[in-house]
Length: 181
Image (cartoon, rainbow, N blue to C red; front, top):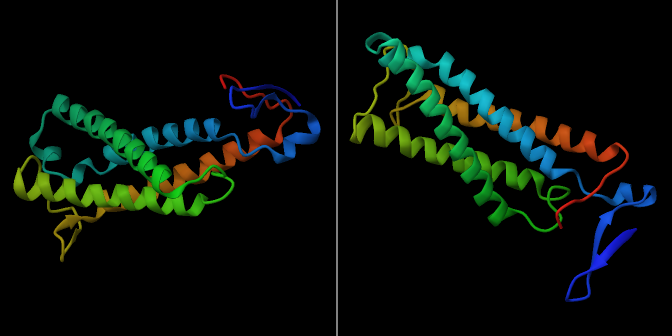
C-alpha cells in the first residue's frame, strides 16, 4: 500500500494494491452519484405521470404544468438529499455502506415519507397551494394522496438498489484509487 501519515500518525491510503482491493468498502461516491441520478430522473418521471391526479392538470396552462413538474422534482431531490444525510448521521458508522445499509435505507425512506405526509397536509389542507383531482386515491385516515406516498417508497428503494449495484460493481473492478484524502 502506498500511503501517507497525517499529523496524528495514522496511515491514509492513496492507492491500494491488488491484495488489498477485496478489503476496500464499496465505492460509495459512485453509489451516491447513481442514487442522486435515479432520484432525479425517477421523481421527474413520477411527477410527470401523476400530474393528472392534481387539479392543475385541468386548470393549469402548459407553462404552469411544466413549472410544477420541474419545481416538485427539484424539491424531491432536496428532500432525498436531506433524508439521506439525516439517515447517515443517525444510522451509519464508519463501516457504512458495508454494514448498516438496511438501517440507512429504512431511515431515509421513513424521513422522505414523513416529510411527504407533512408537506401534503400543509399544502392541501392548511395553505391550499394545490389540490387533488377526483382521480387521486386518498388514504382516508390522513387525507393524503396515495401517489405521493408511493413515490417516496418506490423511487428511493429503486435508487438505493441501483446505487448499491453500481457501487459494488465498481469496487470489484481493478485499479481502485482514493483521491482527495
